[in-house]
Length: 263
Length: 263
Image 1 (spheres, chains in turn brown, purple):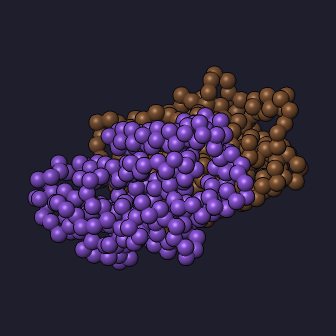
Image 2: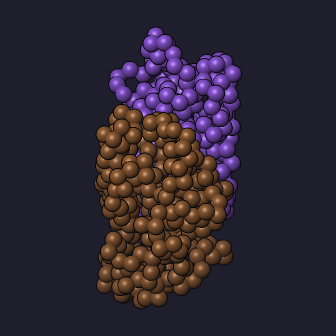
Image 3: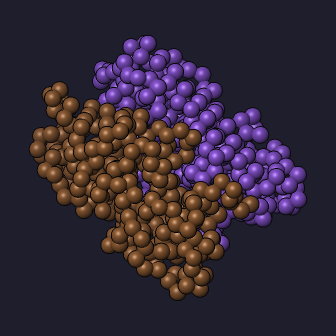
């Protein structure tokens, strides 16, 4: 199961292997083109072994939603640094799944795309809708705590913490849509806009020295250049160890251009 | 074709009938469960008449993306009122597809859901990705003009117009995700947060009288209560005439709860 498994590494059991294979099949065929046969193909498992673990495609995809969402929960297990600004940025980085790699790492966008595709099932499926309400509610609650802490410390403006948390996560949703559905990659500009929003509306004005040091803070998005100031608590330093999903392709290369979704 | 057709009314030709049927099939089965047979069922047309107009399911769904996107283009055809604040809110209302109906009208969310489902195809499909880059770029360009106008008139702060437009539309994307994938309907709170963002970061502080009159402005979202201050230029006054899609179900009731997506 996700959450306790080694996300960055090899699958530790059949169930996790199926989750990894689902991710690979989703990348190749999209949600609309996914089938048990195609997932089985990625996992090198027989279809019958799938039915030993899951009731069918819908059941696998619900489990896959949990698998991704439970991983996000890790973002909430990170201990507070005591500095609400750092905690805020660390949390947003984790939710956006952008640490600790450089901009060039392609699988960040692929992971966000898989997440959005699964989330979109909530549009028509009440079971998915339940998940994609309860989990985000927990993120809002966690972010609300960080903001309340900032207000208490006098570091943040006296904003409505829950409302601000909800709005911030809505902006994050929008960034995920933009990052995954366009031909270009607007994340860097959008992250800059998000940071500007936070500086202008949430964080109290600091001295120039404070701002300079804060912009270099670990946990702040590091998409821009060659530097990598990712928080060492959050990474073993290699992009391949991103906890969301293994960056290694499974049996086949991801995004085979010759492989078309079924008509 | 969309754009020149009567969106709120009956389909005027077979091609448009197919678009309406695609919308109905999407509501019922979701993108993953859509098929030509299911679209044909909604339209009461034979499968062969589909192939007279389209090359297959992928072709229909690309045309459907155009059909929705062209409708958004109408938002850009609205003549300026000369007041950038009003123009800004009118545009955002149109993009969110929330005017002119009351909160209770269920098909607003359904329309946004269909839009998001189709947009999500851009995650894995380059042709969709092209569309969902070029069209949003035009919305950004249009919104940039409104903001530049506001800066020129001294009504808006001296913000980076294009960057602000991009950020506003990213927030709108996020609102669409939240509105369509949760069990509750957070649009009213999120619209309030978006308005607050605009008041605090874009529009220069006005007098109390200005703000009071501006909050009542036509074009501002009217989800909250019984009032309906929708801009009379934009509506004939009936929710059924919303230009995005006909609110009337087609052959069958939408969202038949007994109809499950194929496993």
